[in-house]
Length: 99
Image 1 (tube, helix red, strand yellow):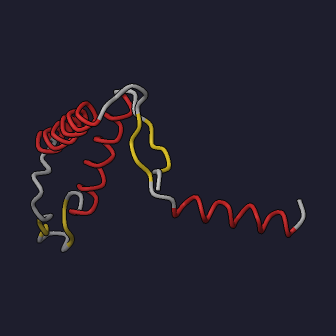
Image 2 (tube, rainbow, N blue to C red):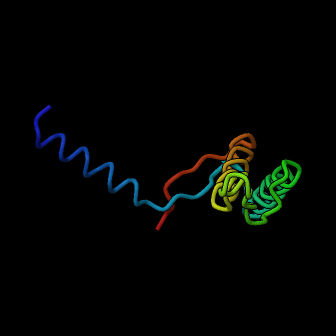
């Protein structure tokens, strides 16, 4: 592969990374999408709560001087991943948004 082709490929990947994405499922209307997304988010929050991540900041363990458990950012990321997995299980896919 020439350096020019590699550069164009890299540029194409960079552009696609900036694209806005949305969930899409063939045959699903806005009401069904809203219900599915709400249900997935609720399920993700409940799963996180059962796992002991109640959205509270991590507690510093005085023996080690470092926070124990996942940080808030990690908790949010895990919750988002759970919700995204739920949407995929329901048959949705992330596609570029129409502009």
